[in-house]
Length: 260
Image (cartoon, rainbow, N blue to C red; front, side):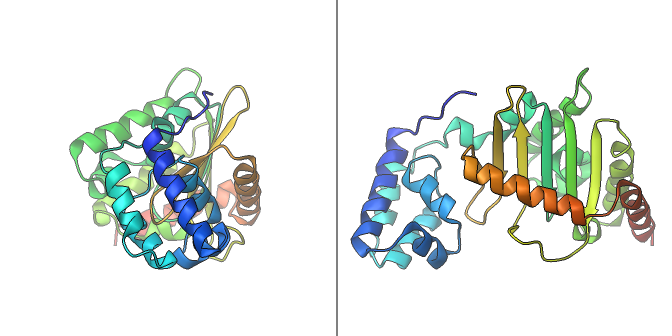
């Protein structure tokens, strides 16, 4: 996998965040706690490895008491800057992976979504087509191994209405029968170290990449600590989830529920 090189604009903004944080005399962890993100996300911003949004710059100003310095810096450096290709497009790593693991806390995973379900979620037909195009990796001659743990609440969350949900549940049951797919349902519970959805892509070279969903925007990381944390969390999720057989029974019950 190619090395990621931050753009000058992202590096300049990140350096300003770091300078102002150090002027205030707080750590990345302290700043992260003030704005309800992970220290890893603050680190990604400061190192220029991710492009934050304007509202995040405003939150940084509020947390650091820096007026509008970082909001102004965002406008100067990042308004016209694009997201780094690597961080903007996890699907590239997904498309070349041998093994894909995912935990989905809110919605059906993109690789399993029906067209109607995707239409209810996405803002345009172009976005729907891109999502459906991603799913072709599951039908290629040598598809990746796909292991998914999905929160129980996903199947009772109304997306698009009863008919769409019924069709989506039926599709889940069908795709879960594929030899390369393992699907498990995680009962609604607290799982230590897990605060949102995530994905892990393992390449033929055994290099690994994680995608973490956060409120300010997703983070893609190849940091060994992030990977170790997510793999450990995924193992615990699997251990506490329903068996494959019980998962199929649960999906069938969900189909019946959406027929009412």
